[in-house]
Image 1: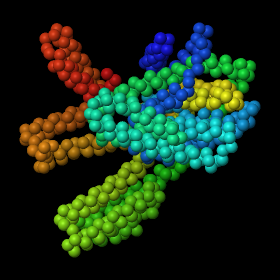
Image 2: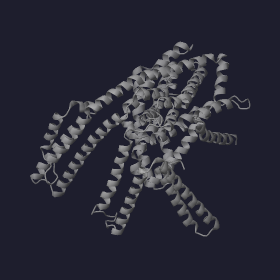
Image 3: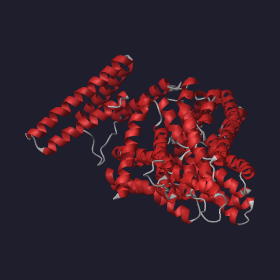
Image 4: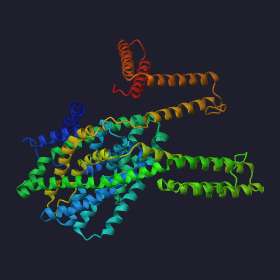
Length: 638
């Protein structure tokens, strides 16, 4: 009964703080930590110690899966080098250098134990991402911080495991490196398999509630076998989430995706808030343990402050060359943008030129592609290296040309010829798509530069949090030197950076002029997406071969009606975009007020009992759908 009461009170506190903190201009996690600290020192409250397995096994896989499932995989691919550097290389450097510092300043601590503590305080916390998202910081900064947060937890935990093993036995450097790559690669494989199996199961369920229930299970199904095989369960959960993010739109219905997003958002809010509250509640117990063992807290406070300064300094020293690398990459992209356009036109022209009237690619096409390559600018390949793609298409075209010669000799039937032709055209289309994607990647680099201001935000957003505290408590309770002191130091680093950096991050973002930044490609991108959506609808409705699933044609009246609806929706959207912002806000407010009045009338009718309940439920569901559509189009909170 007591456990249930505590859980209910914690949930109420999390909900209240999450709702009220933004109104005061303060991040909710900071307030929750302070509340937890204050409650922990109340005499009537006993010292609290939470089993770290609850966090590492029961909470983190779910939270990181949820973050990965909503993470834009396209942006992750584009900035993978930078994200990987910050999530892996920076964590390793920080852990090792801090290991030397800790072994120097803390009596009785050897290098292995120091690196273990360094690995504990190396990963950043996702709270920074939530803060800058609400401020409207540049999307690329958000992507880099969010991507870093997805991966650096796994890096630190794998390093921690190796360092703990090194304190008990002799472990070689190459052994640590080998175990690290094994843990990561095996976890990625398991996560991809589980992610795909989860999508397959959810696609065949065709039930939103059951689909969401499966998504609750997926991160743990990925985590548990990975841990059993000495891989990283956290990486497996993240990999499963990234697979879901990439493929969910293809395999899941809109109802499935909406239900999953809303339910996971609720779970994230409660779990994250509960973690920060628990983080504060454990302070008194940690302080008590250190006083009993050392008689003073000043050693822990001093080492924690030193560690916090070191991690910020190391982060700054790492981000500076990273920004220079990204700036150099952007300059190369500027140089090759026009060359990429020219090469795309040449490839398309040559392929069209060497296509016969029947749509068959001729044998000379491979030579034509080679000629395009030799005429191209070498800088193109430095910017993205589609050279391999050109060669792949050359080889495929040559093979298809050989098949064509065989067909000309009478060795293939008409059906075989048609399949070969279709495969060839599909491959050429795939090549063109890859080339277009390369151009889009270059445009992304040009439109979203990372300069000194963005670098300051990336550095200052590197605060530590609940993963640091949970990882610290996994240190062996027996025969590990200075365990209570190390745990309190880890808490000091996490709490200090969270309160100082987290408390000032909104001010830093606003001071640098990065709050409320809109992408330079927003208008162009919006128009381009409109053209794709509208053009696809027109092409489908104007297709003379349009058929139902059973092969029968649609009635002309139905086609005309759908065309009228699509045209009307396009006109409404054009009118909304042309309306001044103030009038547009009034429009959506009035539309929502109208829906509220309609709902009130339906509820009164339900109270009177004058209509059947199923009809009333259907009408209310329709109003709910209308309100969701209006809120999404008007960007209102409702």
